[in-house]
Image (cartoon, rainbow, N blue to C red):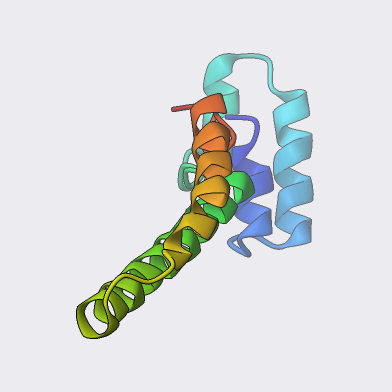
Length: 113
């Protein structure tokens, strides 16, 4: 309840003068009902989006998957047309292992969930 005026001001729903008035009224409130009237017409704060680490890990994982898929497809075409050739895709095993360890250790997970 205490963050609702701050969130409303940050979202541009109330101006600074109204924010100041609401905060003063909240400080002068004696009961919970008086506090609730201060924020009754304000919307509840929006839930936070995904964390920056989750977004970064998701982007890195998708890039890694695209590179692996491309190298496997290219290697497969080379094997079909020229016979056995060096498997270039093995160079992506180590970065994939690092990403897997980071995901397993919780780097890409949001704390609240």
